Length: 371
Ligand code: BMA
Image (cartoon, rainbow, N blue to C red):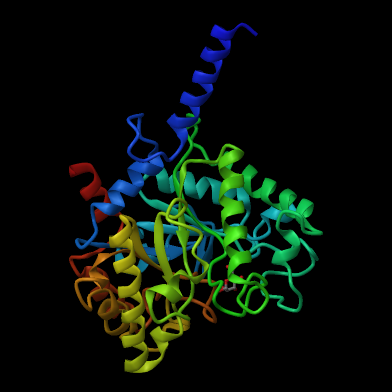
């Protein structure tokens, strides 16, 4: 190839890479993930988006009914943020580990994007060392075997390829890639996942996390934000950062916390303290902070939404900087986090959502369109 055409080709390749990539501060057209990040940043200290896992897929007493949502049924509007779970995609399964068909999940996520909402994905993959073992089987080391050089690295690459394949199809009818927040390897400080603290060193986790995101980038999935979300096992910033893959990679500084949020007044104070750590670190690094998972299963405290979640998010100037809080799924009456309309906690849920700074989809859309 002649030198001139080679230079032109290299320039084209470089430019096309930049246009898609999350290269902040570079004067190329912004990707929709960058726009999402900026929109989230502009609500820091102003509002917290309310999120719900699997909100559009099913709820209490219904499954796959178009337009349906338990948040909407009880509170009159959709959540602003929608969580989805990819576990099972790595095995080539047509449905995820909670029986949600991946083709439906894709349709829901596209609907969310079209309607102004935010999508976030978690991934509880089966083990690449033994594909019969779910994320919750913690009887052997997995991570060190799936890292580069490990005995099961090739299988892990196949798993990543399946996950990448899903995200590459996450586009509108017009072919536009939709932005999302990806939150892999969460709660790594707990002992309940095969990537958890008992079976994985912090260094291994960092390598795994970085490898996962870089692999996505290298394989053409670039239009997303990355969330880092340990559970509650930290008491200061240094501990929080034990598994942190790096400021160059992460956009959302998150925490998952159920335990403290169901453990009385002391628990609430502990949860607030952890949200503060997260919010301070996000501010220091120019990122956004989020309460990436919480909730009270079956809502056994009737004032949980105002007395716990509302109190935590509105505790002080730091917790008010949390940009979203997401509760887990409404499987059925034995496992749910959003009250159905007749539930005795429904009024309290509505009071929580009626606070000015807690936003559902319409509030968020009004803000984004009038910005
Ligand atoms: C857990 C429970 C499980 C579910 C898993 C992954 O918290 O809700 O029933 O399979 O999350 O979504």
